[in-house]
Length: 230
Ligand code: FES
Ligand code: FES
Image 1 (cartoon, rainbow, N blue to C red):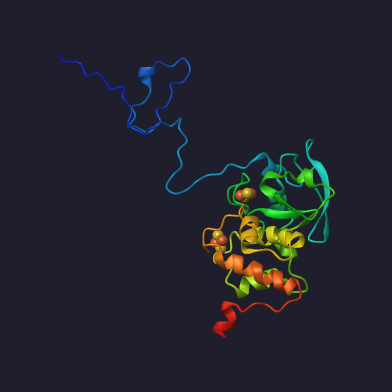
Image 2: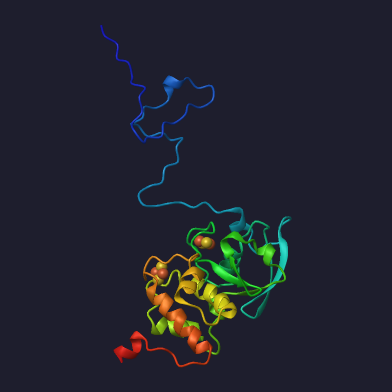
């Protein structure tokens, strides 16, 4: 009579469930059988459990803090959890969904806003840190239904494709041109080096910034692709 010995090897890449405390290890289900203790996503569904900040946004909990700030010229008062990011606050509590979220750890620049006139990564800034400040998002650039010169230049020079990076780049360049109104192409490239664009290849963005700088200096707008297209 032969006895089969169950293999203890694990498939490459498989996560072997750990035995429950006090449970003999050889009673753990084999690797090729479902284990009810493991909460696996089904199909393409990826579940994002609500975070503390989701549950308490705007609520007067014991830990919520009052904040006041100006967002695109409008006074805002709210209660936020201390851990709530400025990006979540702007998007969810203020409706400023032009604040885009890419990496959410300070690398891509998509979430860039102006805080008291200086660029800030809103994914890495807490809402409570902006208390008392003045915030500008992309929604605050156009005035009276008219694109501002930088937005106009991005349109005229095809400086965007999917547009995901565009709000962050517009605000980065807004600060940049205020400090350097007549930049070289090299300086423009350095200024936007912290904003990742996966579509344009950057050349049209550089063209747009150069054009906007000229317009803001009171010079005629350089010819753009839209002029040639009629
Ligand atoms: S989302 Fe903030 S830097 Fe990428
Ligand atoms: S236009 Fe698509 S990421 Fe920049």
